[in-house]
Image 1 (cartoon, rainbow, N blue to C red):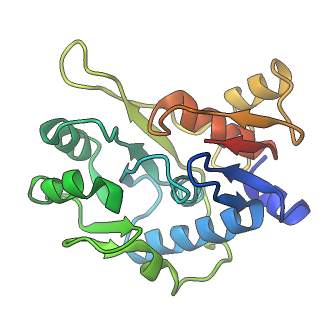
Image 2: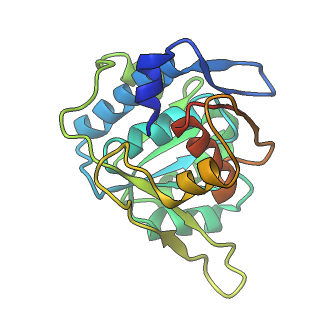
Length: 228
């Protein structure tokens, strides 16, 4: 299962809704925007197996970026917005990110990171302009809403809290290269919890954490609506 299936069968259904702003994103919008981001990734030189990082609060564009990376075979790392500069810089460099997407709300940390992430060749920001970053919305507007020709499954690589030294990146490779292949979490949510198209899944936690991100994305795989 994958959101693109639901974009075909129920395009106007809400895939997720942001509780703070009330902004809703439909399955059609999620599919089209994630396709555009996948095209951007290829245009900037990223190929399957490359890494990128995300520095954003709970934001309407967060899942579009994650799904775009997922369908382009990219390994994506979400960074806590509560980290100090040295901590965030360590994760960006340790995960070997070649591209970073931040938000204007995280402008201070995003700006401070600029001289500390030499391996990041491409930097984008949502919601406006920020020195050293390209506006993501403007960059995406030139790309088609159809899939890239070489879709393959990517996945997240998230970091531990670092209570026993430096944070550790944890990466579990996709169980199949097919972007819509089932996985263990999906089967647990569908079988044990009965999650499906009728589900409204409430996730009040920061999306850069493992459980909120993964369970919300699993809800979207199953055609549910996630509230974040």
